[in-house]
Image (tube, rainbow, N blue to C red):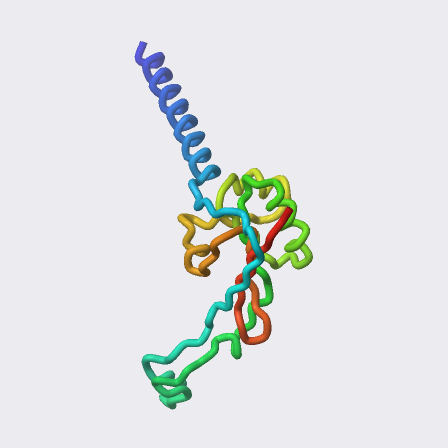
Length: 163
């Protein structure tokens, strides 16, 4: 009888683990995102990358940039890829993004809603999720689809009108 009780307890624990794994997987794959409308008109927004130093920057004890110096980070670092934002629940946005952002495999696909796991399997590429709209808010994206990229020493967000 003791062996039977142990087996029953073990079966219950295994079932509970499976159920919990299913619930966690479902919640991770179906995150709540931010709902942004489709762009009603094209819009381009310049994002500033200019920063004023609060302290001296030193190298080997020697000041190489003084406090108060204004620096454009893009003079030193280049963004070599685009970051493409779209709603994975909207098939037209998915289509548009695949067509316009797939030429460079380094480009990042970021969804604001939908299942990144399903889309990742379908497109056979890594999909990122904008959790709580952190990136779209920070980049002031108001409509989708949108692309964040660098031109010269400037960063831009472009929102696109699609059919």
